[in-house]
Length: 140
Image 1: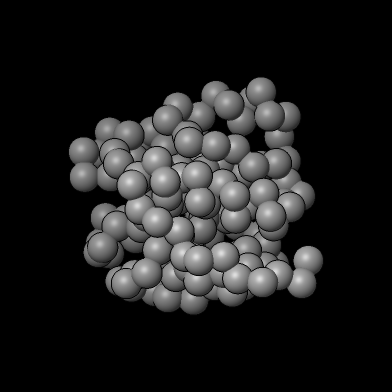
Image 2: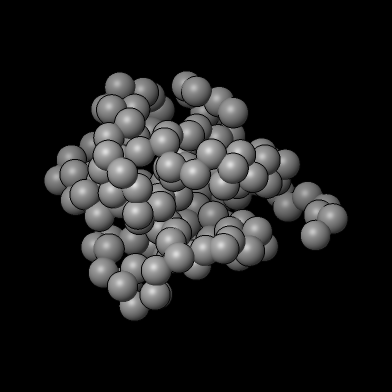
């Protein structure tokens, strides 16, 4: 996983579940993305303030200790230099509750289906005018 600077399409994944972070990072990296991870909303906020360049997409869990997805989204939407980062939320919550996240480009239900994750990344990148990496052959 990359900790700074993303020369290729870069996804910033924020979730408090280590095993999920590892699985998502592996799938995204195998598909050609650079991946940055954070384990809480607070850690993600600090990283967004101090690291450059900005990620191309933020994949954000909604329910986490130490800064949930809603509070992080509120902070991001109040920061002009971060407004253009597309956000894809993920949660095991009912989809209608997840849709209450202002400004989210999409929502992915947990447990994650990896083809849905990759489709959401491509959609979010296309909305930003950035091409996704060329799809690679998958075994799943």
